[in-house]
Image (cartoon, rainbow over all chains, first blue to last red):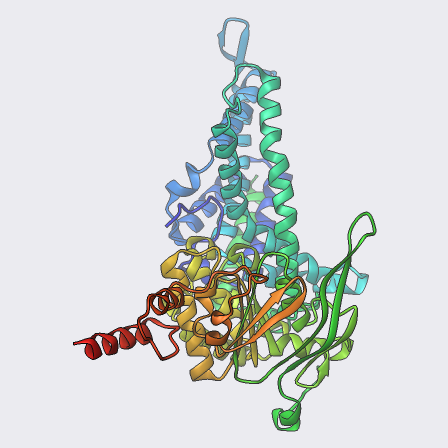
Length: 262
Length: 291
């Protein structure tokens, strides 16, 4: 059994898993818009509490979500430090030439929370919603756009396939990296240019093989009568229940009350 | 969608290739002929093996059967429907299920269950019917307990069974498999072959199995040999394995070769031997007659 890749769907039967994909998409969207528009403390704290509540209810191990990406933490930390140092305001303490202000700390924390919420929102969404359901949800939500000749059905399919192939492509990249290493590719070279060129030696084969995969997959889909049309049975299968109503209501109430208090 | 009742087409059942030629043009505009004037009839309910070396036209032949490719000349008909007619192509693709070589590149969905539902959903069947078909397909290939898994967590053989189940959910008459075992290990390979035999005998599905490994084709009713785009042989496995010409450079299965060697050494194995059991019986009889 291979290791689960971050952000990929983890089957489960929790409340969050069972929610209608449209509910999850809409609530996620509302939360993201609110925290991006309004960064007052009540909004951020309430939404952080909300997102951790959702994480708890989804029964996904928090470890797998929070420790998943090393790079993300570096970005979080970098943005926090940048805010601390660069914000003008009442000085709190200073490290040599760097002055850390109270406003800086507060804005740094706020940014950290915003990034964290953004990250958790999207990760929990993709981890608790199977891509087919996600595609169904998107297809249903954006259905009105069909009248504007937006290819909503194909777009939904595209997202499904992209999600399906993330683990496959990661595996493939690992295999190519090993293959290039075994031929002496200098991945650990101290020179940046050399490392960049070595990375290219992984990327190019990866792109070529993805194109081959794409051709094969297109043939396989065509063989199974895919014509790019709408999936009636997929979109009709969605069912908006009581829990969905409650979940949406909770999200909206939290967002509005946060904004009012802030 | 065109609805065609089975009874109306009894007389036309089967896949017919008449005088089929398929040409490709490469980037220099040179003509390459993958199939040359092939005539072939596959009867409903048969288990047909198609063998040939790389470049003999096996894959081209497979893709002509469900209209993925159209013949440059000649005609391919499935249950009487011509693959060149656009309005029946969906029905033809439903009737002729396809399983490809690489299990990773033919699965659309990250969840087994949804993968199998993909085909029936494309036919716009009602939900209950889709669920019923998914259930049945899972049961036939024995993957009920993996239904919620993601294909990338399965073994190659399991992935190939998912692909077979996905084709079965369309309730096809014919199942075309293009080298389905070449990327699998021995166990995976054997299980796939067992499933195919079961599908043929128990569920009456016509199997068209393409392979360059003769061992895979022992259980077939009939083997068609392709060589440089032409049919170089057509007959029962026994008849094909007996051929001694070197135009067709595929090795017969080990059991058959062993029988040939024994015969050359003067042991009288009189019956047709293609399987392990037949070999066992043959040797037992030999031993009894000598003692």
